[in-house]
Amino acid sequence: MLAVAACGGPVEIEEVPMTGVVFFNTLQLDELTEFYTQRVGAELWMDQTDCRIFRHGKFLFGFCQRKESETCGILTFVYPDRDSVDRMYERFGSEALDAPRENPRYPIYNFFAHDPEGRMIEFQMFTGKVDLDW
Image (cartoon, rainbow, N blue to C red; front, side, top):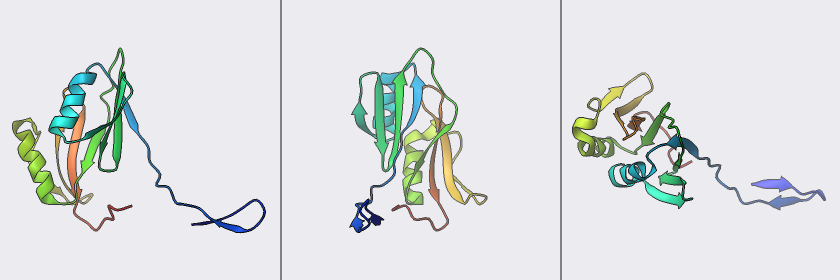
């Protein structure tokens, strides 16, 4: 990527991928840490004592111990293929709200479950052509 320097000449700039973190308040930080690392397979990326950030592929999400929890929204974990979604379904078994299915409206293959605090989580793959290497 090229940019124009203050003196007018072009300079080479290293392109840095844009990232972000989605945070939720929780009453169960330790339980969620175990759930997301052991059950979902996320990595504890940063531990800030009362806030913890997890990484699942390129997805960063975090929880902060607070006096109230936030359970609105859906945490969606994207996989490259159907077999990976099916393996997660086998891992969650009866906790899954339904079996994985095609959803041609979006187009995805997915299923839903809940984390220990009742937050909705989704495991999906895109069935259409999507560049996951961005």
